[in-house]
Amino acid sequence: MTPDKQTCFMHVGKAGGSTIGCMLGFLIHCGDDDKTNFQSVPSLLAATTAHSFHRGVYDCSDEAANYLFVIRNPLARALSAFNYAKPDLSEKHPFSKKYKDKEIYVDCDFWTLNDLAERGLVKGNNGASDECKDRAKKALLGTENNLVHWFYNYQFYYESMPPDANIVVIRNEHIVDDWNAVETLLGGAADLTKESLPVNNQYEKKPEEVYLSDAAKVVLCETLCNEIQVYKTILKRAQNIKNEQYVQSMQQLVTSCPKEAMEESCPDAKPDIREKVDGCY
Image 1: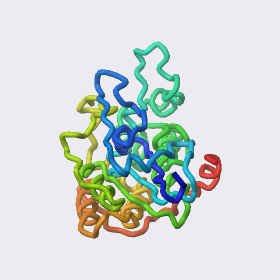
Image 2: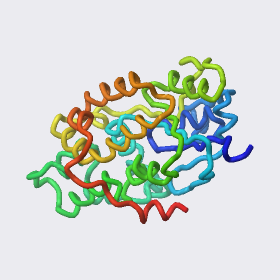
Image 3: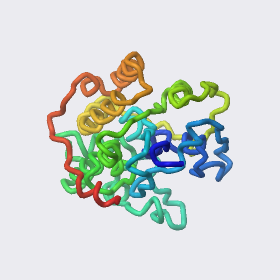
């Protein structure tokens, strides 16, 4: 298949990409343990999507017809990424592979995202060292690689693709509707159902792992402000997302980050990540 007929799968970590990857036929956490099941979905979308971009590995042509983003509420993605990367100290080698960095968890003693936010990001809180506060902010901004799926964030993927790329989107919160919309856009049939969705890379969380206080939410959203604006831009540019669907996603975003959902700019400048982007080619 020529590049101009292909779809590039932009696999943003902890946004639902493993589920969509399995549906597309990529072997990403597909049935590799008793908590997952694998089910690829015969479709035009799967047939045209044979290349992907995940973290620092770019396997797509710049002439690809479409760039498929799987996206999720940025605060929910940040929480999922934090819990995913947390090392299990009962393991023999807790810092091997995905646990290559322990600065956030062990050295700074941030074992929940709520703790990182309240002790590491809230101004005036003396619960963490200046070094750990700086580390927490840079990690969440994606400017320091202490937590892999924070480092490879929406801004990274968005700025890595061609500026005039044609974007299609599957929202984690609306997988069936958005998959069918993309499939229809490609000339296929909108026949995906909720019952046919695979379950991949999902693990039961403890209550303290998903809890965020009001103060934590405010400071996390403030720090994620530019990331939220990129998320909104991706949605606005998506060929399969209608205005009412964009409004639907903004209404959902308002429940977690109301200020950032409504505003179009942020107090701080967007991080300069040109060196990070250049490093993936």
